[in-house]
Image (cartoon, rainbow, N blue to C red; front, side):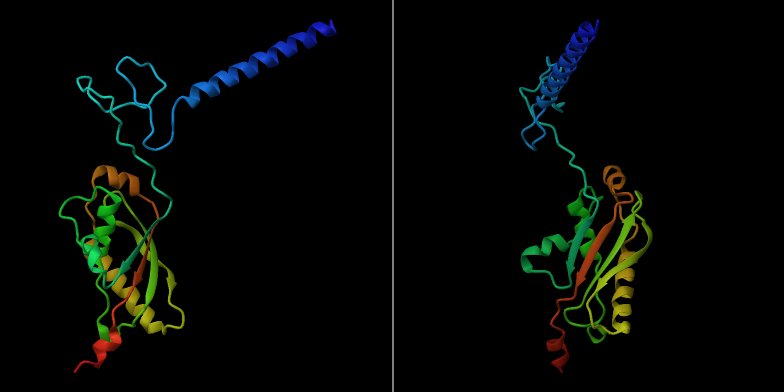
Length: 203
């Protein structure tokens, strides 16, 4: 009797292991590596990546892949951008549909303090989130500022950051971008790289 029980248990373990191996092989058929997905044919039953091709296309073709956004969206904004990055600081003339559009709009919003109240090399970082409607959730939270800076200078820059963002809000998101960004923390590092000493020496 005991021998029969042992034999039955052994067969059950072997059957379970075989089923798990078959399932793993089936899952392995879908290639998760970007730009190496196996697209579906019209006649395929899967597993494969669904294609956005029409049945009249000669295909196969690969779909647009929506990769997930990271938990933190980080951006550095220079007061004086390099000439080869001028396009990245131009506000888009359409609804914001990509992260690049969002970053360009935020860069274009920045209005630094006047030179008399500014400090060369000053850096300050803030963190905040957007609603899907393009409005901000609460006030930006200060996360970093250059050490050794007087309190009034920090206040001046924080006021400039808040005023710059308020002047641009609400941002106009498409439905897709608004849904993807809603509640996601965004961190912006502002860098005042103006040559303020030279400006002060001018008559």
